[in-house]
Figure 1 (cartoon, rainbow over the protein chains, first blue to last red):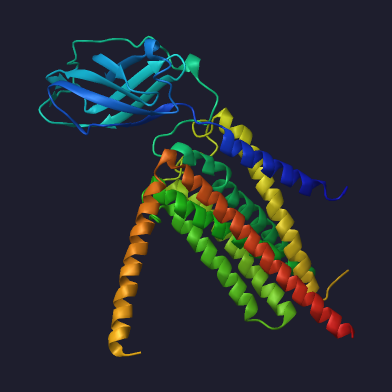
Figure 2 (cartoon, each protein chain N blue to C red; figure 1 turned 180 degrees about the horizontal axis):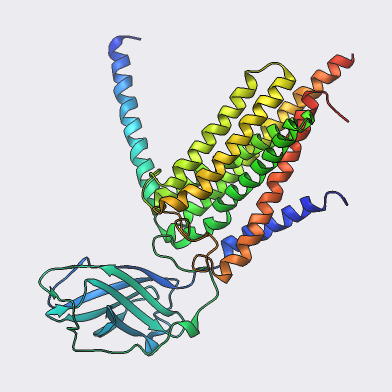
Length: 342
Length: 74
């Protein structure tokens, strides 16, 4: 048991991660509004919230419409239930911008808003201040934040995938690094290290496949496509193909020493290619859909808030430990295959 | 089976495929409901079954090796 403490740690961490990832609620947020164009005069708008408490907070509700830094008041606020509130906006003849945000503030939910670019049917857009009415919202959102995962537009509940999809790639990187070091040591003369390399690449590929499939499923319901020409996606697929080529190459060589040395060279280049394709290239190309990938490092403070961090970091550690565990099983198999037991 | 029957069977299976595709389509749409939580469940299922399948395969390969080694000893 003393030598296997990390396996227990892996199980406990992943147990905590799975429970926390699924039971932590999302903070309240704005799901949708029921109009797609605005016209001069009065218009009734229904805002649909998520995890909101409109009914309970009925007396504290403050609805308003934000256009740039101006605020339009609304009339006839009618709460239907905890998720639905409707109000009438009296649109003026001119607006400073077509970027319009709808806010519903209350004490329990903070500020629930939907920002959108609506089509304007017969309203003139001018660039300078045109709104005569300016109402400052009185309920500040920052003081009333509930505990929970952040509510992100489009993502909604799928923000929980951060604990499942992302650590797959961390695990793959971890295993491929083991393989990389083992391959260097193979070239330096320790041919037994080749077992480590092959085991690491095999298990690394498992996590690569899982990352690709889960990413594709996630993309289908957020980016609305199974696959896009995101540099991160195509890079990951290229890395997958290169490592499959590594396995095929090994099968083609019979002589054990030759196999170890040639595949070690291949593996070193494959690892360098992986670092370039997955870490460097998406940052240079600047058009990755992955948050934090273009330009700033992935751990920017804007992407992860504290509620995500206390689950995400254990998740990364837990999945890496699990991948290392599977790697050790694979390694024992590789050694057994050569009857190479110490 | 006559040709007619085969054609009938083919057409019948086509409608079945169409029905299955329509069902898949409506199933796909349910993934957008309730905050897209089904996507997370789908991801968890993929990871769990992927790792389980890998371990099952590894288990079988090790069993095969064990048998080989046993046979060599005999």
